Length: 266
Image (cartoon, rainbow, N blue to C red):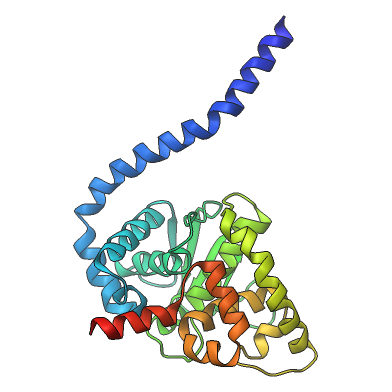
């Protein structure tokens, strides 16, 4: 009899877990939304000043984008190392993460509680070369100097924030498997059918738009593809059309389409 009771309790927990979590998340977001509305104008002023991507969105999508950025920021603890904390820092970092995942269902990277913001390049582990950013089990690490240069578009095809958020997105889906987006995981297989042959050709010496660093390993190939997809979509679609199409399907986004819509609206 005791075994039956234990079984029924465990079964009930398993069955009810998902609905309870969904209901809790609904109530949490509803409460946070009211708090967000009081800060929306402030968020808009910061994000609109720095992110071209955001400025190409419709008014409704901008509202959704900012609320996601607000929730992302609320879910993280930001640590500032040898750099003075400023109000725009966590907002812009959260916004870049949301840019990557804007059309996906899962976007909080919930495995990562901590984000470390460093002043400049730094040394990590036993590596001799300095790092601009990295992702591991302890958190997401970003050099603020390199991050803000990427946001401002000062370096062609290069956006360190998007690069590291690309690593974080892959991490929560494939390594920790703590925030799996069903669409992303399914489409990544199709992405790899296109991407793997390109990556292997790069390891054999072929040069292309992605640059040498993308040929280091497949993780870096993915992260660099994220950068170029958003930073230089026209050239990517022209020179690597199959990869561009695979990225567009994977992320449910088409940066070129956003550019065209923006031109028509103007």
